[in-house]
Amino acid sequence: MRHFYLALILIGIFLASCTADNKKDPNVIIIYADDLGFGDTGAYGSTVLKTPNIDRLAESGLLFSQAYATSATCTPSRFGLLTGKYPWRNERARVLSGEAPALIRPGTPTLASMFRDNGYTTAVVGKWHLGLGDGNIDWNGHISPGPNDIGFDYSYIMAATNDRVPTVYVENGKIVGLDPDDPIEVNYRENFAGEPTGKDNPELLRLHPSHGHNSSIVNGISRIGFMRGGKNALWRDEDMADIFLARALEFIKQNRENPFFLFYTLHQPHVPRVPNERFAGSSGLGPRGDVIVEADWCIGEMLDFLEKNGLRENTLLIFSSDNGPVLDDGYHDDAVKLIGDHTPAGILRGGKYSIFDAGTHLPFIVSWPGTVKPGKSEALVSQVDLMASLSALTETVNQGPDSENVIEALLGRTEKGREYLVMEGSNGRVAVRTMDWAYIPPYEGPAMTNKWVNIELGYSSDPQLYRLSNDPSQEENVYTGNKEVADELAKYLDSLINKN
Image 1 (cartoon, rainbow, N blue to C red):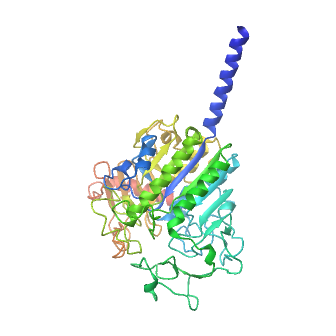
Image 2 (image 1 turned 180 degrees about the vertical axis):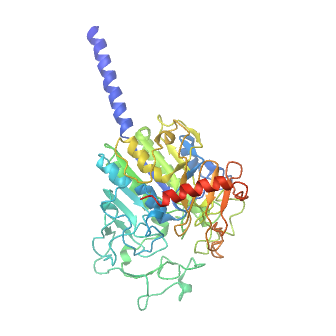
């Protein structure tokens, strides 16, 4: 009997050590939507647009009500998430063209390199929009630098964005399906002789631009920039969600035996909004709503796959978006006409491009069954903090200069997050907020975006101060009666900007 009990004790110690190892090295998946607003999901209050799988994720995890991207546009917010560095510190961290050189240079510490150095296999699948190459890209050869040069073992991405040329997929630095006898040429300054464009040949379009987006035509949709060739490699927009999902799931399948990090970057609901035929008309809100339903389905497929393969309880899954919502962002797709009672930004003011809260205040859900207790959190967190927080989780050194370790808040063990955070509107202009206050310095510039986008940018020649604890919609500027609070926040912002 003594031997029997000793054996039980040893087995218990062994199982406990296995559990401890699993908790130390969980799989990590970040699902990153594109232009999804604070009010675009049922979990965050939408009663019109149905998102059962995002809601299911929220029910199994921790829903954050005070979470922020670093920027109100996509390139800089992605830069901030991956590097742990505020994008306004890098003057190139703006919305990039389709031929822009790589923004994150080889040797820069990133989330991906941190995980890879800690023994993880790493991948990015989906939208990239952080530049490729060193300029003057030969799209027909090996494209470098790119994701594989900054920590990702595997990459399957669109070359730029879904509204920019070249409209092709790039796998580990090579264009997928490219026929060497039909090379791709790209030019962002002038068209190629004889190639139709949305501007000159509107009769060839099935989706018409409202502003810009009137250059080369692919799949009946005109884009930003000019290209020719590469016929076999061109994507069909309707298939994009299925292709990215399949690649993401295949990566998980191949690497399930060891810890992995997956940055799964959805292209929805960015323009052009072209859902697969299965989802067309599914939302009642037009193509924008339909592609959100499509994205929600992709998330459901991901959750089902993890559960069926026994990976769910050892996978930390984070869901968020790169910036706030926009309706008309370049195409006549009835997003404005069919919006009805749906409010993409919820109660927040502004949207994509805006320094008001809706530009960067976004959905943020952390799910890790058995470790993160389901519920809601009011902790103030920023996506820039993922670098420090996940470094702490894996017991590695944080190399994100602006990243704060809020892992205890992300795991639901405390509601104490950041004391201050900085968010960026368009063109590098920044504001600062605390749990109670948002301060926007005076900025010269237009109050609104163009007449199609129709979003308040939030710029004013007067300083603005909003008490968010009782005015989350930022309706009343209370700077005049609270100048000492504004001065304190302005001082903090100046010290941060001047920090080396």
